[in-house]
Length: 410
Image 1 (spheres, helix red, strand yellow):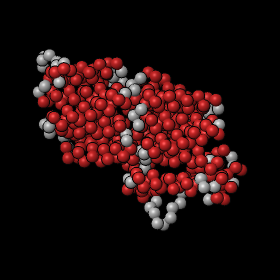
Image 2: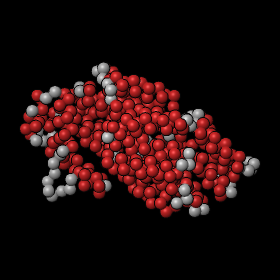
Image 3: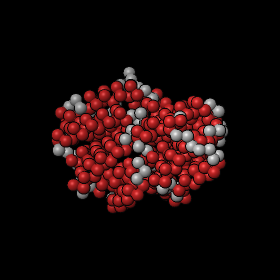
Image 4: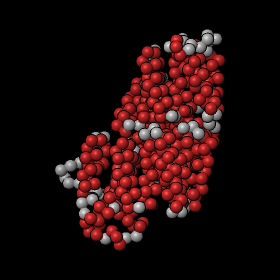
């Protein structure tokens, strides 16, 4: 290993990047401990962190290793991000940022800002993420780094989508695809098609959304990009579920789980699982719904994915309402709402209010159902989600003319 680092200064920038990647990816282990892959399969976050810390110490034990410590930290941060260890990833990215700032390494600094943005999005902090993507964009522009510019715009677009600023999201994604095309980066082009599919899904333009997801899948299959493929399959499953095409949705969720396992993306696996749970719940298959929901919760809790956890709580609430246990259902609806209000995720928040209203209608409390439906309607009107407004209109017609209760009546 030391010989590899002795040659490091003689390598080109691209070669240096590959050395860092190979060094991290192929970090050796003694026979007395489990491999990184084995630890991933066990899902033991404490031991994974210990493993990474040991490798970090070993890789930076030489002068040459210390000179690229910020690059190694960034690589380990990326590993933790992919497997859903967002708090640990944040720690490594911030350490790398401090070193890169001291060294004046603008290129690596721009990359770190963009990675921090992605990490904050996964942590349910999209407003903070926007600031990091903006900084990452500025560094990329200074270097005429078209790939970096594309990544920053795509990250900003995703953040705007999360906060339901859909026009800004589309504008950012279009700029992202412009720069991704300039460098012919098909991975990014595939990802942008997923992102645009998400936007049009939230706008209620389902057929347009499906077209973008299918286009993304065609691109990403050729590239064997299973991280992004798992997202595309998951989101296509979600679209089919919204159209009540349950069997098709389940098949896409299974594809998503398979791709996420191949990519070792525990977070994406969890998202596909809680969507599968929701689908089974809508099919009234409570046993499978509970099983998939609990598996998802375990993975999401270890990753501290708050938005994902809110979806698990929403599923639990829906399942409790199917079982006529409305007290527990209300508790979990409120837990989900609390998370989404704090994370500022309007579409998902509106959807929870909509599901909550259905449960209250089923319980016979149409007054409360109308109050909740009014909250959902306000959110979806603001973000102009046609499909959800149509669903709200259908449910509203089923409610009695009983006056809505006020907050003080609850």
